[in-house]
Length: 350
Ligand SMILES: [Zn+2]
Image (cartoon, rainbow, N blue to C red):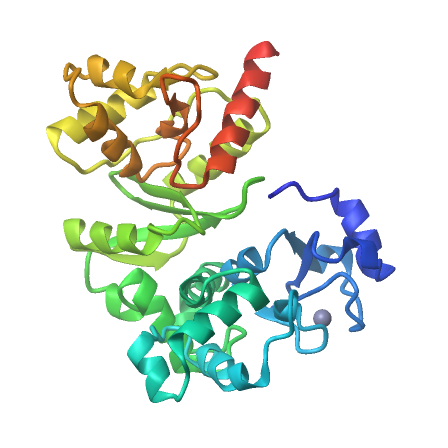
């Protein structure tokens, strides 16, 4: 889960190479683009140059590479030697999508690859590939579009890999994208992990946790629907969104005041509107929501449309739970849903 110790405590553990914090956090070093175990023997970064991730996946999503000294990726069982060429290849070409057939061509058994990834890295091979790809693209959001256009090394060995990974996630490299209508993407930190936010002049188009599985599909759909390109940068709506989210997470904001650009059928739009009408700190059941939009029989459809919401938190699909009070699914993960509902419950209690 996501509950990290305090930053002071983690920094102390990092400097003292405190083994009892092993596995509890990973230290991401901004100046080198590398992430380490707490016990790493490398020189320790200054406090202002380190950020902390609770999982390997999160560190990768933030665009960091594993340290070669402390090898944080070989947490569980050390990654076997036969896997090394594959890992190197993925590092150089983070946009690669390797399927079973591609693995066989490399003389690898797909089943064994999958099993080993799960055991060594605590994630599936697919999740690892996605994390590498997204990590590179997200890194571009930090470093700015000039970096990508120039093909400059933003911490990855291969320039072309960097550009291609960005294009794979966002559809095009910024230079080429400028000839078309554009949406602007940025990265927003939250206590629940990093979020990707995208806006155009019409409003906020997307707000999602970076590790959401459907993220790449959502980005593809967004580009297709709008015929636009997505480039990293700043936009007044994104700045407002970041400020308001920070206030929300501090318990100081209950409603969002942001222009939203939503695309969908009449039913989808009605269902998303109904979500925005659920007051802060309250929950509704799927059947409540179906009645609310005038289609009491459409309980399943409501569930589906909730899942298609691309504006996490701002359109509070986390406030819909089962009639028996259980949480059921959430695109950002059930633990996040729980966390958000608890935050709001505390806010209401004052
Ligand atoms: Zn290290």
